[in-house]
Length: 151
Length: 429
Image (cartoon, rainbow over all chains, first blue to last red; front, top):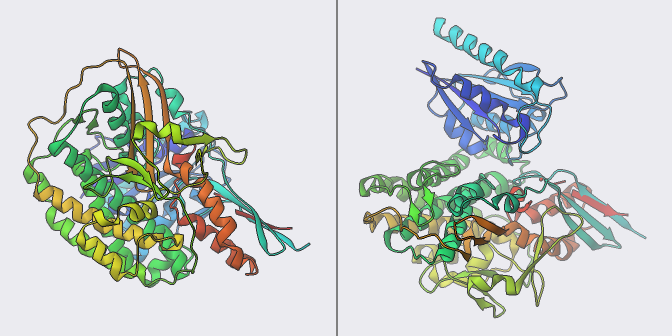
């Protein structure tokens, strides 16, 4: 079964796009199903449905240094809510994951790569320090999928 | 002097970012400001110089929750400028697409954003711990709305199949009929939703609003009709600017709208229900009656019930359209491009959405005006806060704050749309 990679963000709101940029880089790779979305909660729940393994890439605002990449095992433990407070949607990523857990809809494996953002200016591209993290996240996701295939 | 300020620096469970400032002096609300500080978005400015045909796709980007509304107002306005009329199955397909958005947007607000206010939960997650089956019903209903949007619009968010004159591709009869079983199930879920929300405990409050909506002789309004109000306004859409005015206020990046002669007014589910009740389907009317609603409903806290009735209507209407659907000969009405000015209003889930465009002989947009429903409702939201929360000013800070936020959420405000994000300050001095 293909691993589903979901890139979350607003394409034109500075570093908010980084999750989508990561996802786009994985497009067309064998064994990976790539989806880009704006992060709206109910939609995200639908997008996780039927998948056994989901990897999510999203911009974070947690006070870490911009471009820092963190791996969160959402299937194993709750996602710290303040980390993704940057969503302009009414229900953010952390809440969506918890809702999926309560409703028994969380995929068996669910890994989140959180990329610390610097700037959310509308119309701005990725800031250099965040753009520089894209390759690391793409590599980490491929590594993650390699592990799952071997398991 | 006994004064206090209630301040919410970041309003939860609304789309976008904004804040609320309420000043209380001697037990009375003296000031209430909904402060919208999401940066202005300049959509009207960057439409200038673009082709008339790009307006539906550009304006759809204003909102991820109600893109269809922007597309519909844009195409109708361009068609008005070019003098073309889109009828028959293409018009029905537009109504169907709009039904999808109403189901999707209203259901999100009812289940995920508003119901927790009435049931005493912090948010949808806490509610889901105790009411998992109910939340699942809401998600299933919303999903059917999304599926309708995919079917007609090409995809769920920012549909790509809409163009001036109609669609790029019309769905086949067979593709349409596949939706029927899901829609009939959605209609049952919508009826259950009306029953569920009607049992909530509603504050006894009423307001004497001027309700404004579109009105069509034969339809509950979505895509067409005249602009009417319960105080005698009855105008074609092209006279909008003669009667409505937008002004800038210092505390908000969104413009405020007023009726020139009278001031604040209200658009959205309560207004549509008050002005078009007899054009709901019998099923939706019966459900409204059984839910204890009478038209007009002047209690804004009951808007959640009206919203649920509209979801039921949208399911019913979608079934009617699909059952009667005949594939059009061609998916769009062609247009000859020439200079002109076009006006249109359609009924977004949150209320009337007005667009006006002036285009040049080559179809380039010379100027554009977009008035989203949340801008129109902002003065009424502030009046509600001044008039409705007086009875609650002695409540403990947390409860008063919650009542203020609930009062704002009655409107399902889409702050992203109206700016052109929410934070609550209550000042008790």
